[in-house]
Amino acid sequence: MKLLTTIVILFLAIPSFASTYLNWGMAFDYPWPEEYSDVQNYAIGHHGILSKKFDYIIEGGGWKDSSHYPGAEASLYGAAAIGIDLKLHERYVSYYVGPSVISKRDVVLGSNFEVYQKVSIGWRDERDERIGFFVKHFSDGGLSKVNYGRNFVGAEVSF
Image (cartoon, rainbow, N blue to C red; front, side, top):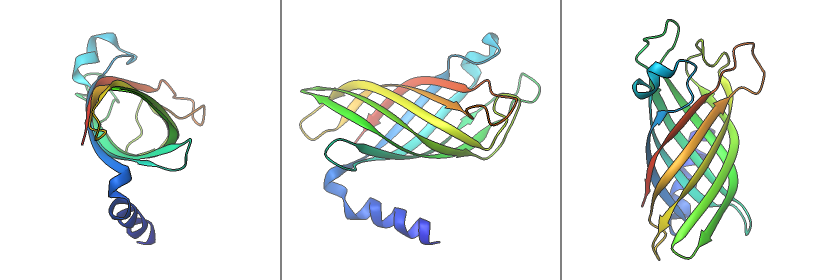
């Protein structure tokens, strides 16, 4: 309960230095190529400033897996990551890495604890509202024998 309260306070305490974003994407490096378009990722996140050099994101979402391959499962996840967000006039480039937890292990990800990585590029306005593209990677870093990883590419909107 203390963690949830801390997260809510973080969301409310720094609205002028933070933004909310939405992601939608599809798998692009799934172990079974014929299933790419059936595995989709949906997420909502919070982006904020951690220090002069580093930013953070807190993201929650999941992927829908059609289970055409035996043992592949849909899952929810939560991630917290630290990274850099380069603002290049009307463009941006960002990279984040951090821990994540998934609700369901399967034949693709063999652990509930994963390393989350996200790279984003796109356009921004003077209020830092954004539209762009992302690449996400989930992997357990060798914690389990099953470690194909999940990779998604998609679109993001920040407001």
